[in-house]
Amino acid sequence: MASSAVRKKNEQALSMGEAVLRRRALRDLTDSQVVQAFLDGEQRAFGELVRRYDNRLVNFVYRTVGDRERAQDLVQETFVRVYRHLHRFDQTKKFSTWIYTIAGNLAKNELRNRSRNPLVLFQTLKQNWDADHRPLEWEDTQYKPDDLYRKRFLREKVEEAVAQLPEHHRVVFVLRELQGKTYEEIAEITGCNLGTVKSRLNRARNNFAQIIAPMVD
Image 1 (cartoon, rainbow, N blue to C red):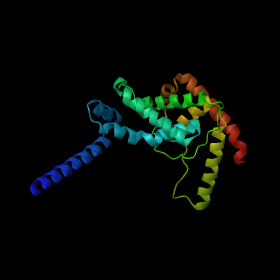
Image 2: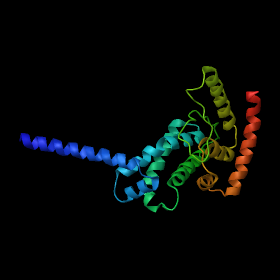
Image 3: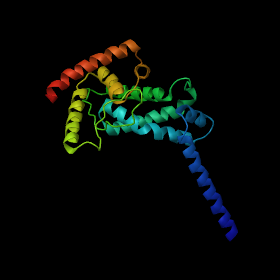
Image 4: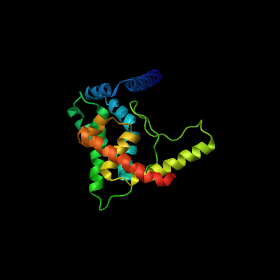
């Protein structure tokens, strides 16, 4: 009996150790490789996708709908749809673009279903940004207290200014300036062509500059 119990504990320990190693191995994979691992039957791979995108998607959706709890619900719905339809995902495309498109569409539907368009409040601006474009960042522990105060003040004014942009301008502005997405990714996420994306972004930047100028004089 004792030896059987010891053997069972050892087996459990080995199983737990293997699970930890598998999770660590998944973290070293690209998105495409994680997707393939899930399609090949590795259920932990989906958890890795959630780990990578949960916070980023919540912040993105929150910036669109202006309600963090609702944003969390919409992101959960995003992951449900991803889980159900991942086998249909075109793996020649970027997974990040696909999942952002799903979340963005849910966010736009949320706004359409409301009786009015709420002002969008942005609070969590510092994230893991894409390398191709360095968006607005705010906190830096190397700054002196006075510098941090000025940066926090500027952040508040930026939030107020962005909230006043029209929805179709606000979405491209957030994706480019705050999320660091490329023009091509924004085009796929919003369903617009590149020319429309660039035009909207240019107008959004001009409107943003006009709105924020008197705030920071």
